Length: 313
Image 1 (tube, rainbow, N blue to C red):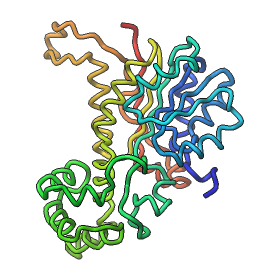
Image 2: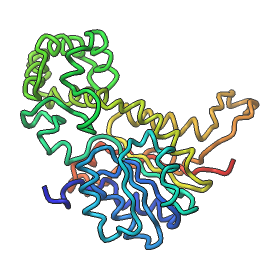
Image 3: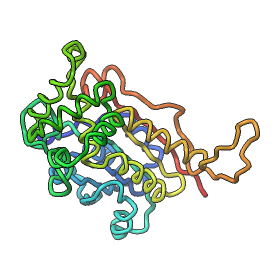
Image 4: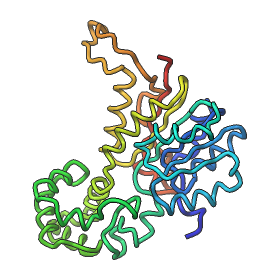
């Protein structure tokens, strides 16, 4: 696949405009992917440098190619964004004393990962049931399904996307013990009534739920946000793009906690607990893609951008 189609950056204009408030220092692209956002951010500021993080070796290779014109201002490392503190500490030589003035997190699966059938992220083509962001580590989706109990699979399906038919789907999947995406799709279809199958592909949310659990995405997200808040310098900017309701709720909750310092005092009494805010929210609600962008890049349809600025302690 050509590198310019590896990953179409979602909300690119909005991201560039947001980080223009802090055009200097080091920006951590915690989900580098194919380097689309980083390319735009580096082009927008000739003095900004980017420390990129990704666990997917294909993504790192693509980003290296795409960002070659900016090679002197970029370093890409193999890691997950949950380890952002360690990544920043280990790359002090790249920071060279400059502060981390921005962190970008573009969550979920990339267009390339969906299109690359051998990775097992999509039901559109039959492939081994893998779903790992890093294909060299952890258990595959097929291995997970070989050991999980039905009640736990039901819980994961409900927590991460599929609620209405979770019980029937879980039992059908475990009875089938699928080894390929096609076998998983067939197991899901057998469990869902024909009428419900007419409302969009019934396997979409099941694939999403399994991908989330195989890659421990929700725990990674919580750790990544906390780490991002730690490494940002005062005045530093945080932008997070999410793609499904569970992700967005987690981001909204974490940023609200950071903006209130965890204060739960009654509003009418004011804060008496001594909580200290860590960020100011720069928007009251999530920012969505424009209709024009959604038409050009359908992946942007479900994107939600939330932003914040770290305050001095």
